[in-house]
Length: 287
Image (cartoon, rainbow, N blue to C red):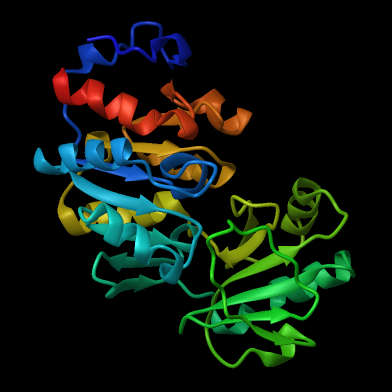
């Protein structure tokens, strides 16, 4: 059954047709900002209802985001049908009740290596650490571009590097006037095995344990639930969703998404402000 959004289709093959798949997914993963939520940060009743519809059909619902758990909890409560939450782009995995299933901290001996290298290459960079215990330690001059609904209570210090006293999940890099893509590509060539730099979904690149991504975390969830990647769908809009799209059997990029993500998606859904998730899922529920 062809949906009303098919004018936006980008297919890996011209023979791919949504209705012809004849396959209801066992798992659907949703990015949050730019995908699940509208530009004003709201979750529309239509999207909420559509997700509840696939949950009623036995689908496992996963939120997959760059947000920390504290900034996901209220969305989980509003949806009321979420099974798992992948946070900090795969650095931590939670059940919907907030219990931690997996934490992917950087190797202890490399905890400070990445940000030290970043500071040497780009002296004006400001640092922010997401700690494994849930704290956020920021340089005093760290400036973020987080969504407006974030209610962060970071520990502001003169030097985040000297304040680290435990495992770190991610380092965010406030690049000031530098191009984040240039910062990412430059730093990448200097990092040792065990850590890597990647897009965070914002204008702040992040340093994490090597191999940690939304895709790797989804694979962890799939192993817990016995769901094969081929039985999974993913919705997203940013560069931090690439590994998730590569992992999932079928992917939907939002029309408002990054061009690179649009180019690898199986389909392009209407934008988040047009309730694109609901448009796709409603079509699925009646097919």
